Image (tube, rainbow, N blue to C red):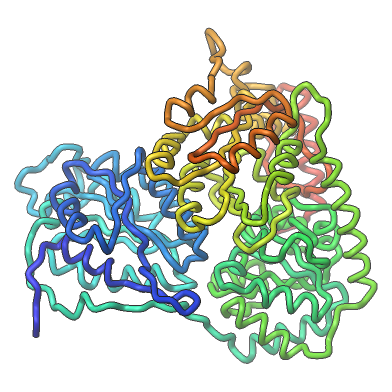
Length: 614
């Protein structure tokens, strides 16, 4: 057997460089590169190994470990999970900075390979710099924090262990059902140890998406439910996009006359101008989609994990009036809330359903009602997003300005706060994947780093990041990375001087204005943050605009700029789009001296009674 004598880190990087995927007939690297911030726990082993493969497996430097991991996750999402990236950090805070990003990827079923440095396997120099010592367990390190948020976790304590670990890692990263973050904690001494590795391990391997077909009995049961449906509705989730099933969904909806509502992850599954696209569903849903959801008798949930924002905390979907069909590649998701599972690839499953339902259509009256509701909703969108003469514009008005400036190749990126809800309701998405929202984990600080990853995956798109002042302050350093790497973003910062979304929720649940807006937090002096000056200091073109008209002019200038542009606009923290929406279960204190809380608790208990038992 032919062998190659390599360090463990060299074997790892050579293996990653040999992994390929086929997209539209072209074989391309599966791993688009490795994000790295070096420290004493990875610079000698992984640093030298990555240098050796730099022409085949590029290394990218960022400014924050969580930021670069967020960028890697966003890259995978924007690539519909067909390509991915790896991330390496040192031991200590660099490694634990990955925990939030791992949780984000875990929730959203997105592949990312995390390669943090770890303690010495031989333990001779213990405790090494940054080592966390557990008094009762000598096997624990800080990287164990990553166990519950990894689909697969391993610690490499001998150089030969990397071979089975990589095999298991690839099985998870490329599996449509088990897909998620993988952590291989790399003991820093083992990174530099040599071993005679079989040469065949480094042969090129081409990974193609697995498309599971449904069980015949499950398919027959789903067909029977749909054939008996009087008021069917499709809920399209992110799995539609990951499976490349947008065309199959459009064909199914048109052939059978079934309206479609979209989750946050599933938005852009159908183009916004499709006559059966009812828009968003759930807590941040359109009036058109939610009215149908309330009346539907059969709901075909495609590629969605049915989180509470989608189901209205199971008050909108999942009642006795509904029968659910869970078309999902993951059995855990397919059978939620008593659904009839249909475990299959979304594209394959929709095609087989369409074939089996040949000749069947939803009743014409249901389709006509859907189209009427859609027309009414589009008028509500136009009203909400139109520019007004308010002293401070609403988020919806800013969205309207960005929408009017957007070209056909624009991808919008957002994550947390009030903006995702407004975008879910109001944004009119075109091509699949052009709406990129991280709302499974609602991770503040994802936006700018996520935009960087999207731009790497979709270099020909105009990537527009919309971010609130709170998220901007949490994680903004990848503006400098975007300038350094020549990856141009347009970043719109909406400054409502605090956490406006949670302030509104606080008020809605009877709470006092407390600790959310800056003016209501403990302070000696209110900070006058100059976001434009800060962004300019990071190398961006930056401008503070005062009106929606100035914002539109700034967006036009940004289209022709040669690097990242940041546009800052003050907005009203209290205004939100009233149209649409559904109930969300946010528990209100059962005991309070404040009459506002008491009233909110009474409303909450009434809502629970209407929902009924879980």
